[in-house]
Image 1 (tube, rainbow, N blue to C red):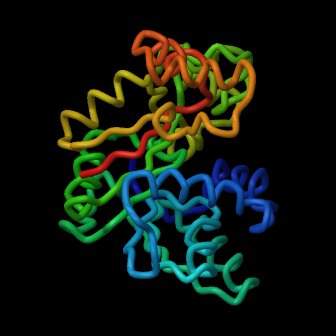
Image 2: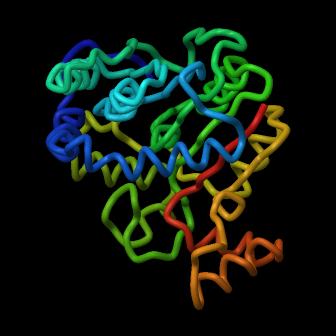
Length: 259
């Protein structure tokens, strides 16, 4: 990937699709993310947070509104401009910088928590990006990671509304998206990757994370009833069931990893 200074039609489309969302509507997602992060470490006003790929900017804006320190790194000048305008409407100036996590130096042991939500599928060279994130985390720091799930069996992909879209070979996906959305999608917007649970777990282990929590670990059995309670309890206690569920039956690959 590289930074493009010109306006890109695919980014305009993203803003049209998601820019209308009200910040209040994002609070449940914000609270879910924070709840998961707190499985690995405490989060308070002294916590230094970095978000990779801020999109419309809702997360760093909500962090500021709630008294938390959150810096953003975003590759699209258009999205930074949009996020700044959204923040101004709320009386908040978000701290978002233009940059590319694949190649930019984001520091060594600078952050207590790093967020990478729905962004790594769009990072062409994702392993160097993961290494950069690991280096930037303090010892004991936590990464919240959420991305695509290649083999989920739901009829529609979370990335694009076509049955079994994620199962397509990479090149076939690229050509399909260019046909639907135009060549600009290859500058910003294409999902270069569709990840699997085991692929990511191995990558986190190889990078050096000492604790890796998947969504089965992050969810609580308490408060659940009936089949949902049984399925989650079974997945927690059975490795084959866990792998089956995480490979085929969850919308996204969700992890919290501690350095």
